[in-house]
Amino acid sequence: MDLRETFAANLRRARNAKGLSQDDLAYEAGVSRSYLSQLEKGVYYVSLKIIGRLAQVLEIEPAELLKPPQKKARR
Image (tube, rainbow, N blue to C red; front, top):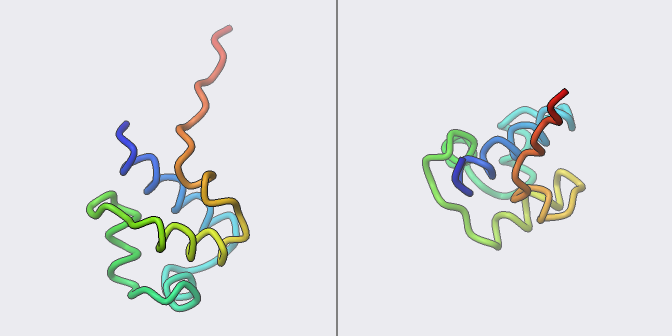
């Protein structure tokens, strides 16, 4: 999984955990809903400025959006 896919998955997960629609998050972060949708699909690269805005609305640290998924422990 590349960093763009990691960001996309983390953004989608954080938005859903916060109970926000794409429209709501896009409005609060000052981006278009179609742009946000493309970010969640991993189509576009995102700027640090937008990462900061999204993280602020989601009330998380920006780094949370870039963390790779944790590998599940084998049993």
